[in-house]
Length: 482
Picture 1 (cartoon, rainbow, N blue to C red):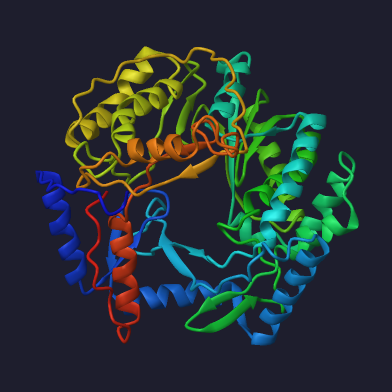
Picture 2 (spheres, helix red, strand yellow):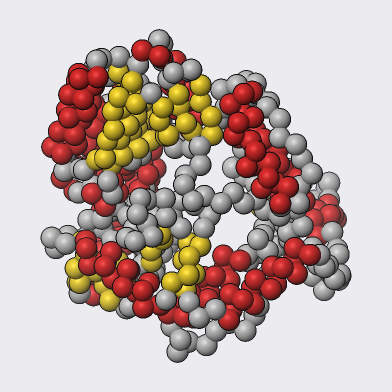
């Protein structure tokens, strides 16, 4: 099949522009750094980038020896051996730390804030994630805490609030929540969780050990200050679940304030019908609870309108509508980009569905839709956004676990229908009377196209080349994808 694949030449204005962009990136002398929560990118001199990276590392980390990392790997191996999965667990790969820019923060132009990312993820975190998932589900099942998983759950909470015009919001954000979780706080959260779930000593050790990680920078190893390798890192396999567990522990203490409170990871939202003065006292009490647990928060109270996650909630008129962070540039995959047709055709309906679900009524939808409509048009789509409130749908059937997936890379330059040929090969070689037909058939083998390397991949390669000029750059040009 591979040898008989035929190709064709595809040209359009967008792919031509993308090729020009790739050339400019390759010839750029500055680094191109992504923003933290927006789609923006910023050019930085390598020296400026390295200074910012070093500042963020030395703020919380100190140098450590190779023996520390070896000890962590040895315990990883011991845990995997005890669970009989040592043949499936890889040694944690050492990857260099990097930063993203928080361009949504105040005074960003004069004092750029950064988020430090440690991409080295211990594989034991996958086991810890499964344990924490079970624990968190049992806690929520028993306590009914508002531990939100997504925006829609926050919207349902807001809809259920009664007498909205006479209520006030209290909104707070935990400052650097992930790195601020220390081993003592996690142990307290696990003690709290043991009231609602049976946590074995072995499971507790796995959860704690999964937080042992080393940060790598310029081939040097770093550990958290205080001579500890305990570190809840952004992007770790069980980071979100750890935050959820600690969040439930904090919510249990906030219940004493007798206010309707919820958490989504490091973002909290509460509602109170107390007087403005009493609400300020509640605000101070919330600060004391977080300070007692070694956490800092930014908080505001007595608000009628609040931006939370990607929604603006309004108590005055009992409405909600989509919210975008400052400096956000709305961008969508272009209609002429090198993506599978199924992805392209579903982008406008997906945006329409999301905006409708984040809008309380047609008026709220129409007020928010204009910039999204403009972005769709600029991306080559002939689609009109219309308010379409969500209707309850039946739960989807659980996906079978015995399916084998074939994911060939997609390209418009391929003229041959790869999927059709592949499935025909399945029918041909595993025919009706074949002894392996029950294992290999169209119900157990599925095909889904994967996307080729995109511009982000070109930017990552460019930044590596800038930071490591002694290494030869890849000769293969980036694929024309977005």
